[in-house]
Image (cartoon, rainbow, N blue to C red):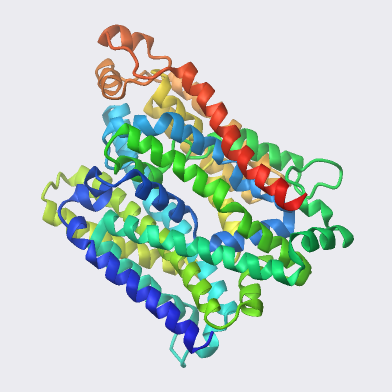
Length: 544
């Protein structure tokens, strides 16, 4: 990194800070403005923000590591989530928008009633806002530390006390917290738009330079096949030479997407859907997100990961392939621009997670259980909560080593309650105790399988143990406990009016569903084919 590179990065950081503070006027009006943009954010801006949020600095490092270990097919670990994200676009986006919630955890006391619902809301809000959210922010910081180390940033730092990794990341983190705490969601989504464009431009730039070093696409595929690594090009893990275990692939495709705690959309995405002006806007935002997230962004990272197998064989830490190739092949100025694009990806994800996590702490814990309604006090609490989450995540990041390993652990400990979260929209019999049992059982089984107590299992087998083991617990618990009170069920149904098994409730309320479940199922299958089929078709054209 030379003076020109640092100048580009400094210009980007200054521009982002100015832009975030410029929109602070909107984000500071009320709690609804701070956390859901006053429900006035355009659908295309919400969609781009969702895509930018899921594109963290850890993502290209993670993809390079997955390609090195399991080939292109290893990307099914995140491609499989397209099944739930398409379901979000076709079915759940309109339901969440009708619910008129500030956070997805707020739904707990709309769908369920009594002390179990209040306790569940409090537990979920804390669990997701603090340990889960800080874990997610932390492994983004881990990737940022790996990146700045590979770029030689430590070598240019003056002698500073403490851990030099913290000093390298601290200025970026401070800028994120300043504009996020000042502007709320409007600042997040506005800067996300710029950050997504910059991040994708950087990914394409690295891809073009990497392909130039290996003789283009034809040279890349030919070299891999000649060196005995042709199996790494497979889009599906078929045949005896598949690098991805079939049990793991089936776990991704048949279990992970519906068993994971974000099966119903996930808190960050629900926040974006709730910030749009209508059901139609929310649905359009979710569809555009799927196109940007899977069809558009996949292949630049995958191709760089494949090129690294040629130019950086037997790399001890495959996750470092992406930044090493940046340093090796990008000229001065371009290196600074691409580094800025990865900083943009990092800032986008952190700003979202800080704002989203603070929404749980303030809306679902502080305001809910203290009765505080004064907007000025709630806004102060929201800003302090943003700072607290950033500090906790920074501390936690120093205890992490592997981006991919942390990503997998985050998936595993969240596996179990997903089916309950989906069914609560479509079946009146789901109650709070079923969700509590599913969360507790899934968490315990994930910890036991990660510790090796349940034997040597592939990742796919561990997913199945958590998902189906939790089901063996929550289904009996549901039938052994009373259903939710009729008044609670009637109120929820009248508010959302979903399709599904709501017979007794429909009879009491005399309200028909607003959706056609059969039509939505057909549309879900069709859009899944479009998104995953489009992603795989591009891969086929590039690699075969």
